[in-house]
Image (cartoon, rainbow, N blue to C red; front, top):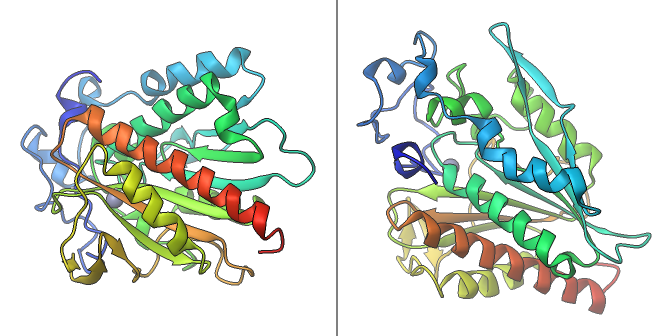
Length: 305
Ligand SMILES: [Zn+2]
């Protein structure tokens, strides 16, 4: 955690689907040069770019020696002549056997929400130290789903898109195409996305997919609640909520392929923006850990779910 870049505001407005593509007046851009409000025309100052390589260096170090963690750098795309990578990591838990439980964990699809990205780094360090937490799992991690937005500190990609409104709509966005290919090929049992909401004072979750999802979110929120309060408002961003759980979802968000049956569980974890970075990260980690534990129990009781 260094410098103001990582303390700047995320601006997760999960239901703000009507925002125009380059709208950024809702973002906390105080520390940004004004030109960055127009990602398509900005001349970027390299000194202000956040470094993805620096961010992921601890994971690269672990992957170099770990029997469990594999780094994959083959997912590449181009934006305006520059080549970017969609970083991918696979953590193979002990005893996965022939039928591992496959879960994908995604963060940073909004480039101004670094909390989830840092939480994944923290979570992978924990798993490396205690691999039994991932027993039975193949965990696919995508810590920086919007690399150009992460570098620029903007919600949108450098092509001016909110990538989390583009899924399963024949999107031309290369990041979305890569992520969709992952979502198809991995045949995930569960999908967890990490976001930051600067309109909320509490931690909450959005659930969809498999009906058992509701049995995963409550323990996850309880685990996070040890570090951050829960958002108990009856309405969160215009949607009905109950004890921090929202059941509606907006169009075009990162999700399982539309035709996949049975549906995987799908959980979006939302941290409030204002608490200290450390608390946000350990709240995410506690929730992730709990979801893995609870889902493993379901699989044990009902192998054909
Ligand atoms: Zn977000």
